Structures are given as structure tokens and as C-alpha cells.
Length: 301
Image (cartoon, rainbow, N blue to C red; front, side):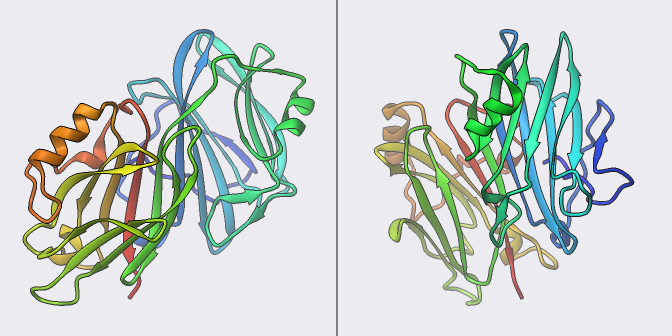
């Protein structure tokens, strides 16, 4: 995945090179959430990555705009915790058009994570049309920008999040635009030599269980959430066999058809080992149909 913005610099806003580097990341810097939205600018589709990060100095925000081949067209950082840029705007050129990015974090309230829970907005405007707005202050965003809502609504296509725990890892996820937000709980005990296990719960309800995890450290299975088939991939190799404090990876991908669900359920047993899980599933370059949730799980020692 792409690296998150540095929280140190001379200015509250920085515009980076058109080429966004991809580097390895360490556990010490992994309190971050990345949400990718597909939106249209002048009829052409782009990906907008909203990246929230947090370190000892506070929360930071980065915004990247990419084409659908993951070529980074522009990137800039906002550091509201260190400087005075808690609200503002920035004009950027994304060929063949210019866009304006507006943000207001002056009333933002944060929980334990890097992402604000309320009291903020981030808006992207192209030719007086608001192509993307996130946060709960949407009316304030429309008033500030003087724009009109876009008829082609932006779609959240993926969320990447780093989570921490000892045996239990918890987050929230909404698997469809009109669906409810669900509690996602991953329980994994790797302390035993032969009886390591994995359980995934949605709103306290167990939806899959893997026993003998040392033999089934990678796999996939399809579950149902809100009547929607969601394919779950897991890779806990680093927890069991990796050197040092490696992380496990989980991916939840909404499926596009009932046929996909039937094929997965009949060919893959969640208590068995499935060979259909690609080892590089975390490196997917193009967002597929539906929504993908990537969870990078780190053990707190």
C-alpha cells in the first residue's frame, strides 16, 4: 500500500510530486485509515484517497488523487494538529481540469483512532459541482463552496485500516451504500502450539471459524452480511511463523452475484484450507465491483 504523509514539515499544507512513492511501513507508524472513493471529474473516473494518520503529535490528513491505474496525479497534506490550518482550501490541477479542495476540521472531534467521528467536512469541487463530500457537516460544505451536489455520486470502494489488539481486534464497517454500519470482531489465539484458532463475528454473531490455524493460516470463505455475499480472505502467516512482530491481513470483499456465493460455499470449507486465496491479495491495484475492507492487524505485546 502507499505510504502515509509525514506529519512534519514547514507548512500546514504541502503539495507533493505527481509521483507518490510506495514504501514499506513499520508497526510504529501504523495508526492510520485510508478510504478510497471513486468519483467523476468532467465525465472521467478518478480515485480520491482520504488518509487519516495519528502519531504522538496528533492527527494528520492527506489527500491523493489517482487515475484508475493507480497513477498518482497529485497529493497534498493538511496538518491541523500541529499548525493553524484547521480549515481552508486548495486549488489543484488534475488534467484536463482544475479542482478545489475544501476542508474544515475546526470543530472536529476525534476518538481513539486517527479519523474524526463528527464535526467536520472535506469537499472536492469541480466547475461548481461538488463531486465528493465526506463528514457530517455537508450543509456547511455546500454553503461554504457555493456549489451544487453532483448527480454522479462518489462511491466508497475500499477502506484500509490498521487495528491493534492481543487476541481480539475490533472495527466498524458498512458493506453497502445503504447498509448499516456493523461491528466486525476478529478473535485469534495463536499462543497454543497446535490449537490456534480464528473466529470472525459480525455484530457479536459468529460468521466463520477456522480451527487448526497452523495448517490453515491462509484461506478464504464467503459470508452473508445484510443478505449480501462478502468474501473473506485471511493471512496470519506472520503471526505464526514470521520473524519479529509481523502483522496479519484480512480482506472483506463484497461479491457481485449469488453464483459467486454458491461457488464459494460449495468449493471452500471454512474449517478447511482453501488454495484459492492469492498470497498477494493485499496488493490489488484496481478496486473491483463493490466494496473492499482491508484490515492490517498488529499484536500488542
